[in-house]
Length: 343
Image (cartoon, rainbow, N blue to C red; front, side, top):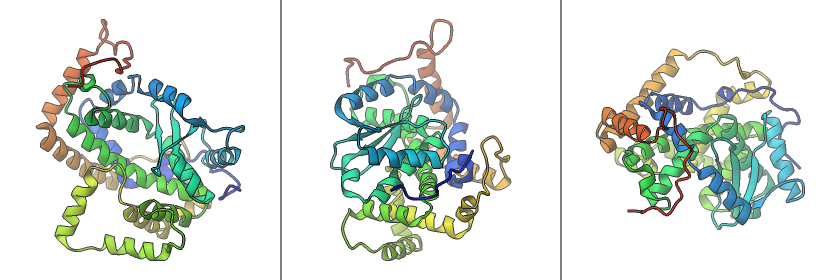
């Protein structure tokens, strides 16, 4: 049976639960010259069409007539968040435990079979709710761009598709944003389930495997120990280790979620005191300061990997102009999946 509240959070704005670092990192991305235009252009590629065809041909689309219990749990999560639409849900065969939300125009959620097959139903529901948090926060455009850039870097997509772009600088900036976005969706998951502990339990098992007898209290203590580490070398080492990841370490996510609950925002939202869509307050001075913090981080990344913000902006501008239509518009959508040279 679906867990969590029986009524939805009517009209809830994602700003009600989004982590300040997520909101600030997203705003800071907007401040990179031409970044929004680039993201939109990347999402014009045929990645979404291609991925949907791959899923239709080599995955299982979930519905009333296909794994109905999983579909019911998924629909329950969407109803609780009062989503205006429910993306298609697919299960694909893989030994990894993960899920993702991709697709710029018509987002779709993909869960891996190992997750559905080995995790408790409440833990699976926590993952589904997390992914629907990405949908409500409209993270999927940036996620789609990140997937495309990462596949080009890994050689899965022809490099000529993005030739001329400062890929490493863009990749690291989007990874930083992605890690912050995950913190928001852990909160959304806790709200949907009506309990943060299953979310923490799910994160523990993702870190260590779906083993019987795991102790959540011990893992939360471990998260506290990790957060309070004062050895500068250790903190420096883990910073560089996390830099190339799409998700923060599980212990950090647990620590952040527990702190948010203890500060009272979780209970306030559960009681119905939350920001509605269309009623979002103006940015605060504290938020502006956080945006500046992430803006400085992104500028440092761009300086290190791309040779400076102006150089990166010039490269993006050149790349966009090369793909303009005859009247200066964006041109026809590209599929980018032809038989191009990978070199």
